[in-house]
Length: 165
Image 1 (cartoon, rainbow, N blue to C red):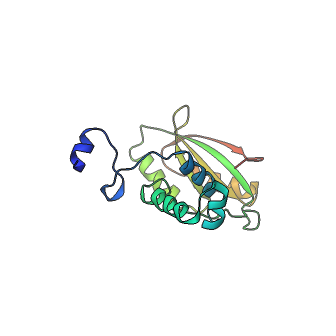
Image 2 (cartoon, helix red, strand yellow):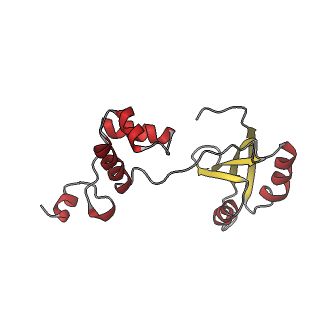
Image 3 (tube, one colour):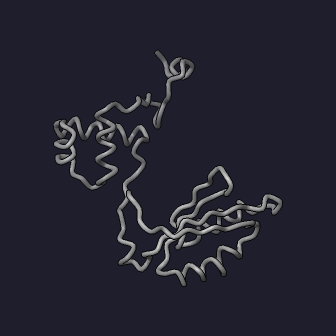
């Protein structure tokens, strides 16, 4: 059967035109283990999920090639980096200001204190994850950088006391 016929029948094709199958229970175990420890060795991973190393590695590569695994990152100790305080900052835009959202996207991409920006539904338009050394640093960021962005109608901040990751 050719790829065009599969596409017509509703099958999903991933990178390289190959069919992307839904992950099975073993794949989900692999993804869970890698989420917790992206540096786990293939031998240790295979033991944890009950596969021999070769099929385990083949599954990991298949998950990577299918797009289920998009990369690997390190968890950082933000206290040692002088960024121990995390704020969640909700932002509402004034839709009457042309180009406000696009300008804001550029601001977010160029700011080293912002560790994430999620555009959301509800009363606010986006949530920022802002890391700073202390409340005074956040106050300066809020007054001189964030509030200075064009088209911001409202800002609401919450300090994160603890998190489960």
